[in-house]
Length: 189
Image (tube, rainbow, N blue to C red; front, side):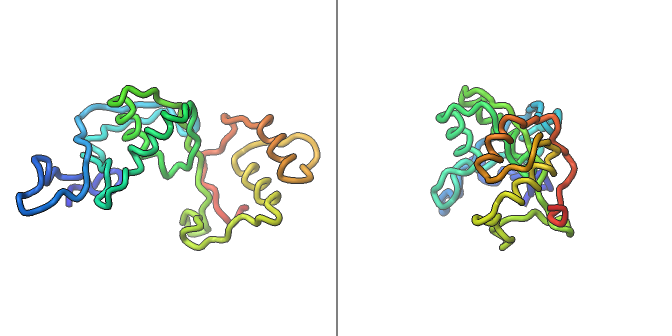
C-alpha cells in the first residue's frame, strides 16, 4: 500500500514497468504526471489538486474487465454533450481525475457544481445502498420540498399541488448561487 492520499492510499507504482512474468495484469492504471488541475466549482469554489501527488496512477479498467468510473463518466459526458455536471460533494475529490482524462482525450471540460449531501445525525451519508428509507413514490412532494429548502432555494407562491407542478416551478426558480454549502442532516428533512 502507498502513502495516504486524498481518496485512499496513493498507488506506489508497483507494476508501472509491467506485471511480474508469473502474474497477469489485474487492472489497467493511467500513469499520472505531476501537475496542478484547477477548476472553479460553482458551489464549493476554487479547487486545486495535483492528481499524481494526491491519487497517483488511477484505475481506468478494473480487474474484472469493466471500465472504471473515472473513464466511463468522462466518455459518457462527452458522447452526450454534457456541459454542466451537478452531483454530490462526496465526488468532488474525483473531479480533478476526470478533468485530467478530459485534457488527455482532447474533450471539453463541463462546468461542475457539487451539492451538499444529506446526512444522518451521526454524519453518515444517507443512501439506499446502506438501507436508508427511500423517497416515497406515493407521496414524494414533502421530501422534494424539504430538499429544495435545505438547498437554500425559494419557491414563490402557494405550495405546489403535485410533483409535476413542483418541478415546473422549481426549474424556473432554481438559483445555484443560493445553494447552502453546509452539511444537510436527515433529521432536518
